Length: 291
Image (spheres, rainbow, N blue to C red):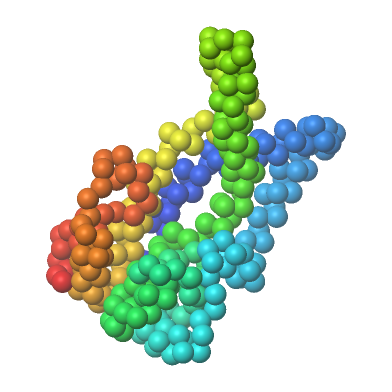
C-alpha cells in the first residue's frame, strides 16, 4: 500500500482551494491589527498563522474534534468490536494502527469519518454491522488518512476561522436588512425598498473593500465539492484494493435501499461533498470490483 501513502489530487486541490478563505482570514486579522495596534499590525495575522501549528499536536486534535463533531471514546464493549476490525484493516494496509485513535460519533446514522491526522470515528449504528462491513468502512476512512485528505484539515480550519466569523457577521447583518427596511415603511413602500437596496449594496461594497477574497468563496464552492468527491472515490478505491470492494458495494446498495433511492437534483449533486452511492458503485465496478 505504499502508493497510497501520499497526497493525491483531491488533497492538493483542497489546500489550493482553501487559499482564498485563508487569505481572507489573514486580511481580516491585518485590518483588526491596523485598528488596534497600527505599529505592529502584522503581529496578529502572523501570530494566528504560527499558532496554527498547535493543530498538529495529537492532544489538541483529541481535545477539539470531540467538541466539534460530538464524538466520545468507545466503551470497553465497543472496543471489543472495533479493535479486531481496525487491526485487520491496518494489517492489510501495512500501517501501524496505534498512530490513530478510534472514536464513536453520537449519531444514529450509518456513517464514519476521518479527521485531522490521527482520528477515525464511526457511528454507533456502524458498530452493529457484520465484521466485514465494519472493516470496509474503516478501510475507507484509513484511505482518507493515507491519501492525505485529512492531514492538514485542522490547520485549514484554524486559518479559515476569522473569515468564517466575518461571514457569520455579514449573514446576521443581511438578515437584519429587511427588518430595518420595514421600519421605514411608514414613509412609503418606495422608501422602504430604497433603504433595503441601499443597505444591501452598502454591505456588499464594504465586504468587497474589506475582504475581496471572501467574495470568491461561493464561486469556488462547486469546485471544492468536486474535489471532495474525488477524495471519496479515491478512499473507496484504496479500501477496495485492500480487499473490501464487495463489502463496500453491498453497503452502498444498503444505503440506497434504506434511503429509498439515490436521486439528487443537479445543483445538489454539484454541491455535494459525497458522490451518489450509485456513482460509487459504478466506479468500483469500472475498476473490476464486484459486489
